[in-house]
Length: 216
Ligand SMILES: C[S@@+](CC[C@H](N)C(=O)[O-])C[C@H]1O[C@@H](n2cnc3c(N)ncnc32)[C@H](O)[C@@H]1O
Image (cartoon, rainbow, N blue to C red):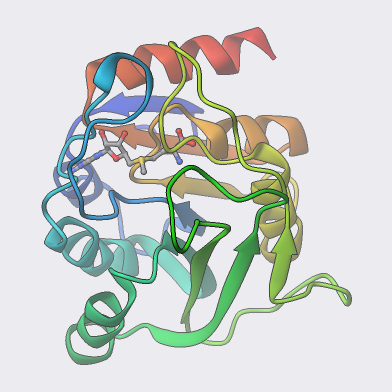
């Protein structure tokens, strides 16, 4: 596999990562399935592996191997999945849990009683990574994405990802997103001069991601 080429690979991220050499990736930013399986919004879209909370955990083992020493992995998650994920990381991986970022959205979402207005981002370290920004808060405020017929129900804001890229990488670095969905991490890399690899299991989202990157 040519890891120097910007590309979206259609496949299972564990299998794809197994073909990558050790320590070849400078930064991982990823947003794995969060673990419930209701239909989402327009057209009752489904997310592959959304019922399988282990998919995130298992991928972290290969992520650790491909990530270079002294580098960071940002992992989006939610409050339901967080305890299970943290226990797995501490017991079964060599990552150090450095911090948790709260992504605070400007508005709350649909629902009742306790309407969602935040998500969590776990910051995992291999070795002792350096950080670039002096003013990077552990609460990041950024609007959520409004969903329509076409977009991914879990699409993440490119601006939020750019902040993580700026904090933990430099131009020319190679960034991996093993669960790339509609390619928001790939777009943020393209905008900021990072090289990138996205992996996505669902062919439909591969097409959407490629179209978004080409449109830039
Ligand atoms: C939460 S979504 C990512 C959304 C993305 N952040 C975006 O902005 O569009 C997770 C994605 O992981 C994909 N996925 C599930 N299991 C996978 C696997 N084993 N390998 C690669 N992708 C997988 C799903 O199809 C889904 O699109």
